[in-house]
Length: 306
Image 1 (spheres, helix red, strand yellow):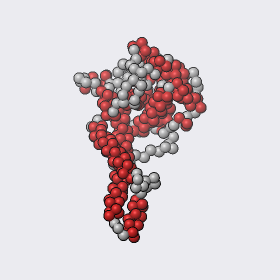
Image 2 (cartoon, one colour):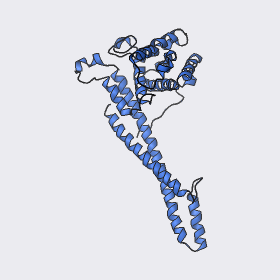
Image 3 (tube, helix red, strand yellow):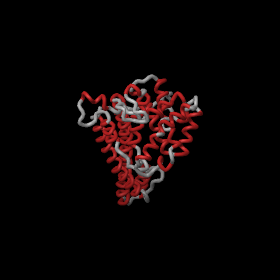
Image 4 (cartoon, one colour):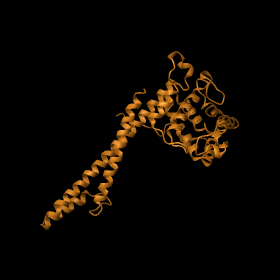
């Protein structure tokens, strides 16, 4: 399995504390109003950064696009809380109000010289290549590249994350939803370009990123499953030794067995709780093994989308 190396100190891999004072201030306002929006903004920025890297963008554009992504939802600070945090689907009227966060965010950025260079993220992240997006119904050539990238990152995180009004959607199902925006059902190949909502090459970059992350997660789970199995084997040996220990009559031999068993104990373990600890390890193994099987199956399905 390919090891995933993440350079935390890369200029491209921005965190909120790396950003300038104006941007940190705006993100702080978002955090005060809606913790989910702040977390979503950071998720979208991180994913936009990864997509830029997969698309082999220059470092300065990657930093620029990532910063735009941090600020893409900045206009939501002026959306009424009863709409922004509504525990259920929005009405048509509420949805129209929610859509204004794009133009509001654009105006906020344009009014601040430090934020002005990043205004495109707020304005274009809900536009679609086929002109069905908002706020302006822009089409392919009218949407800047940063807007196209942020749309994919934004939509992916919005679907896959657990919101107030809907349940978590699996990674594979999320990718299928986005795939439908590239090749709508019952459409001939000749007209696909006119009906695409997102760039196929950006979707492919997303799939590569998801595969990379899933393989990394599988690797971590495999390590943890091995850790659980090693500890289960260790405690089972203790129990086996204890059974032999109880049958030994000679004191010298009993001391040897006792010392050997005590060496096998980890901190906090003893003869009184080892059975309980073993049961907990076995229970964790069942849960993690099921997760590993599910992830491996999901990875196989994701790879089919390449």
